Length: 132
Image 1 (spheres, helix red, strand yellow):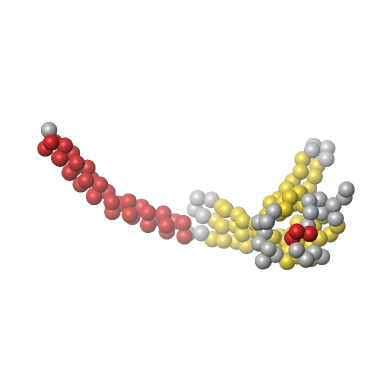
Image 2: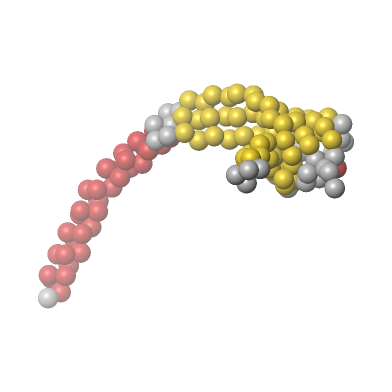
């Protein structure tokens, strides 16, 4: 009985050792696929009302359909060090409801598996304060 178990263990180890190189090739193949991408950067501008602002993002409602009760909103990443502020000196001065114009960069990366987009605010221009 012990000899039979030893043979099974040896067979399992042998199969494992044989399959290791193929797993390594598969991992390298996936790394190469991940590197195969192309990126497109576009600068866009949008105007709307701030619906929320956080340390690392800002949400802008840029269109409303009052009859249907629909709001169109965009969330943009914020980096305090890399965003230019116009008519305000820091992000804490912006409040929900303020009307702003935001210039942002949209980077779209194309992979074999699909697309991935990232939107980052580059300039926020204060237009008018929130209505009470």
